[in-house]
Image 1 (cartoon, rainbow, N blue to C red):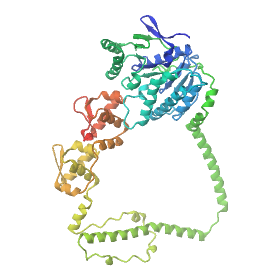
Image 2 (cartoon, rainbow, N blue to C red; image 1 turned 135 degrees about the vertical axis):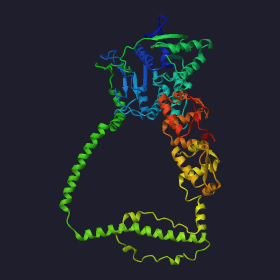
Image 3 (cartoon, rainbow, N blue to C red; image 1 turned 45 degrees about the vertical axis):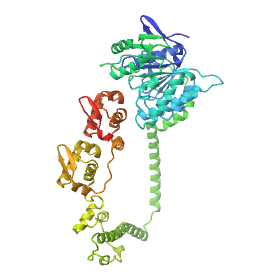
Length: 603
């Protein structure tokens, strides 16, 4: 078995032992610093040594391994499942099927779960579901004995691992929590069943510590973000004396591209800088420089015999074909053609058999007229019952009304069915207003019967918040009622005009007249209920930020930059979300560069 040489350190070859296939590794580094090249070099060396590997690729960039460096000849022989360059399509529900194939069939595999056969990108939820099912099934099947013997070991690589094994799991994200648990088991117990794991990520601070802290070796390329540096420092603190940690941190900030800090006190008994060699296969993840055209492959790829793989994945292939837009369009066109032919035949037969029948047409017209009258009759009877109830209520409220009695109602028309059929739909559909009370005492009783029947919903919601909390700042009203600032101020102005509230120096206070007009009310949600309400109302990006501020920082002020690592948003995206959330008053900025959740969410 040849040696696994991945680079040089101090002029000497840096060699990994063969048991790398059952070890747990973590690889950190910023964009373009050499992580993917390192992963490709490791795969090349494993293939050369006759050791097996599986790469889970969420970005669709690992396919170049099957071509030589220039793209004109074959590279490493492997099967590609899924993606734009895949040999066999896969789908989000096929995690267990793929795991069975990996375990039962020898050979190296790239699992590309970036795009579907149609070219549509997989959603984050679909990726999480696939990886969860895949990891659980893979561990279970690989651990089972084959003819009383253990199965051949392999190294499982997971690119962009922090997206699927994050340190922070949002509230209610049960599928993501299950995914983290499945990969934790793989990292902790995989060696026992012949599975090693290599987690690659550019977001070291996002990676769940339950998997990173048990790694046998850490490979870190250049990183500069304070949170990412802190995550590496935490790992070093478990394995390196404190007097050398500061030195390593300074080194990480200035590493040249392609060089990485390797720390493995127990397994490799090594601590130093390694320069990873250049890959010998096609760099399918390379970003073209300005003015350059992307490189393309022109030669044949190294492919194994795909017949046995295709047979195992037949059901998956059929489902993928069934959801292929091109296939669907072809089937739709065929169905339209058949439908047009059937309609043509039916119309021809109808023309031949149809005869004029005046008596039949007359009966059809009469049935249609009666059907049109039914809604009008029903509405007239509803009006009669409504009028009867209203008069009874008014009589009770005024202590008895002699002027209006049921006896004075006009009799129900005996021939209501003979109403003109020309009554318009507008009249039939027009709502019937309840009679307005004329006596002052009646008006007062009606005004307080349900709080204030005359109060519009928006004004009532403002008064409810004021009755519940007393004097409130206008900004807090925005959080409690979810109204926009302009809407909120319009309602406050109307309530002030009516004498129901007073407004002074940014605060609003209810008057006794306002409380009386409100009457009985259901309290608005506060605290956790208000937070849950906003979680359902906010767009996903804003909701994600609010979850972190409430559930991970408990409303305490934090630097805005901390949100970048916690949510994965770019700075510009993060600032845009915070601007909208600030307008809704669900977040506050106590000082420059700081942010916290609104206090009303914790009352």
